[in-house]
Image (cartoon, rainbow, N blue to C red; front, side, top):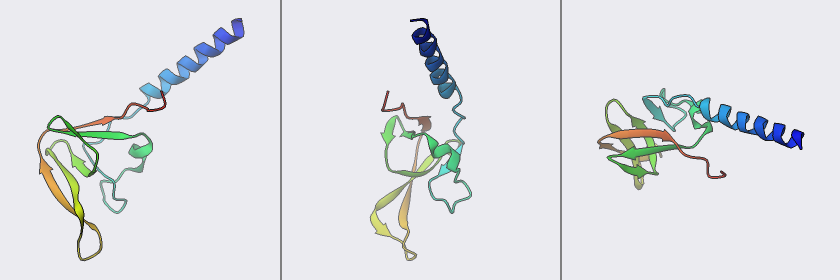
Length: 102
């Protein structure tokens, strides 16, 4: 009985440590690995983006300080075969998505 209680405390401490070890999100982040603003370590956890209070699911790049996000323009491609991007301006908030498994 005492061992079960001890393991429950250990599991709780591990969970709390994982939650507190999330690094703050950068001011600017891109999903394109060729971009200088790509940071693979940030994508270990799911990231959410809100633009003007509305959560966006198709964000390719964002900048909080300048207040813009880039989203793809449908299926349109540029001459090099990359998705054509549109810049939308407004209040940008970046946050870690709550884990769906919990």
